[in-house]
Image 1: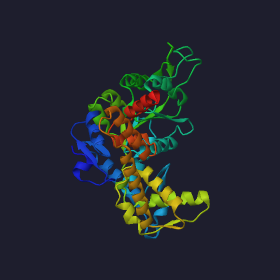
Image 2 (image 1 turned 45 degrees about the vertical axis):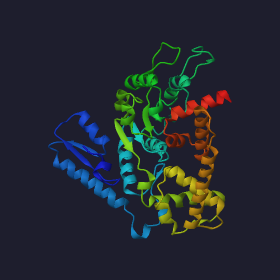
Image 3 (image 1 turned 90 degrees about the vertical axis):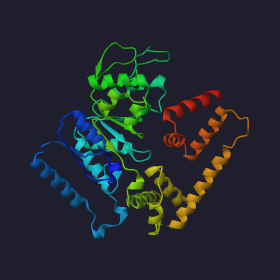
Length: 389
């Protein structure tokens, strides 16, 4: 079965999959490749009719009228904003899955808003009055990750001077986001799988099991099935985490959402500082022609820079000037990593990593993507540099 991209379908297209094989594996494979719904042949005609009516009704109710084309009124859903078809499809999926307790994996490029999706699901769920916590699997050293997730008892290891409750216990009754799940140590993944399956954990240094009631959402910026093939993610954990996958569209595929989001970010700045800067209409084509490798996060940063440097109207020429400055800064970074013959490979690597971090504004996920390494590898390198400095 082809994916949506392989089939040439645009983001937001509703895909129904049918199969004569009624197995969890068949349904799982269809959904992972972009199907919104899975049916076993022969499908019940009445169920299909009701489903199509629901989709049509929602499409009509959310379609903007001719008098409501101002992108400043871009749709808001929970903590997310966007009016394109792909985002409205995402809203439908979130609305449905939020009412359940199934494990959800959110897949999307860096800067697309994976944590906002997770938090929105929490706010729409029956757990909304419970805690919401996020744990970045890449940001935590392996030696501390298990303790931070599952807790420890006093005396469990050197420096454990008191009992510590981990994220799972503190998030009990609510939602826990495991961000950058593919960066988690493989041995710790086995312990995580046991907790997910038994709903029980054991603090480090304890022999007593503790029951926890946590809805787990995981997120990653690389295809999780590829991470499984690369040995970065256990296959059994993947299937346990990905009971319902959600895929976030990159900003470059969101059409006029780019201009709408730019207006929204500018409006926030105007309200915060009691100013009245505006975006010109000619900026639309400029924003739409850019690939946005940093996605929404990059767009927000660009609007903030334009706001600081402009006095009244922000137009296409002004945005292009900011882009040229960014390119010049990047060129400066590239000059900064020029090295003389005889420089060690390790020193060249160090200079390149630090220059890339400067370029991304210390966004470590974005820097790791640009360098072609995992976030975990980046953190390990930085730890080494700190220890040898």
